[in-house]
Image (cartoon, rainbow over all chains, first blue to last red; front, side, top):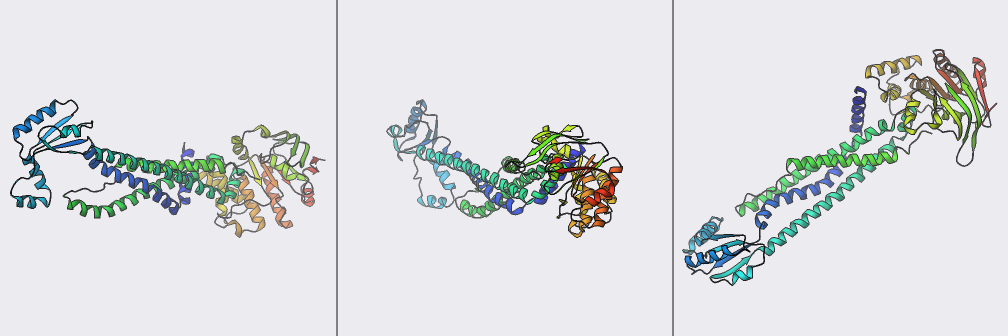
Length: 289
Length: 216
């Protein structure tokens, strides 16, 4: 057990000695692209989810409509089985909400009266906006189902694109590690030959290269997280200004801890895989002459 | 200890390096393998640690038929065979000490024991005190002695040397041979390939003479 441990410590130190920061940086930059894309998408997801969770239809009543008319319409809407939920938004509440939006309070105050009508916000998975618009008392219909679906589709496309990018760059990581190890093996050809002559097993000779692949992947993964953190910090300094102008405190968030750990673990695993493929192919080819 | 039985070796392309070679070396025996260049000496020596495999016949080393050993078993066979080459095959990017430590790195010795063995091996070849030197700083004779130290550090039962004195002056060659004789005297089986007839006659040991791939 001690000898086994000693061999692994020896292989790890050999792998660390061979580690090239430049190669790890190449891997880091490659991995930072999907990681940053994922972080941006994850930051936007809650806002998107709020907007597009359920397609909503807003029914605006005529400004002169009486509250009794509104109540009658509400009862009719609640009785409709195609409608999932109905929420009445009295004109007073709508005015209050709008006044809370930065910059609009003064404008609305200057009007001296409430220009907003009573409204119903209904959710339905069916395309019934046109039908609802013909109900008595409804002056205007605004259906956000279409753009909500488009937003959801765009989100799915972005997610798929990031997945494809991650797969491609993951393959690139394996290729980079494969080539790095191949060059290392060729550089150490004499030492490998002599070691085989003296009785070293392929496992013993290959172990430092496995650790090199693993370390290169891990360091690349950590560098990728550093690049993403730096890029987000830079981006957020500008996003903050834009978001505050809309009264929002929105910021792009860094990857959640489990995902960040996953980036490093997957990078390490892919590095190990690249080393495994390279060692399996090139080490066997070297035999003492 | 080492036994060749009707061994033939044919290389791809048709060159027949060994033909029907049979001989045995008893444990603790020292023998010289002589013959002209191209007689098959190096091929015969390479069959012992399975650097080459025989085309026919059997090569038995320490009770194991080398010809039928699986690839994964070769390292363990080689750990019991000390190999010394004409070109030494030293690693010039590391020190004398690290060269001797190389075979100990993949055996299961504790670091203190490995260091003790390495120093003992260097002592036996009179290189103690030169541990930190680079092999390139050593003379030809010293480099060959370093190669011997590396070959014996794992205490092999068989020591095989291919022209270990080829590039040395007479005095250095005798010093090298004396080292092999000393190891033989403590029970190591030694087979030395050489074309230096003077050295062979000096020790009066068994001689295996190869001509055209056959023992004569």
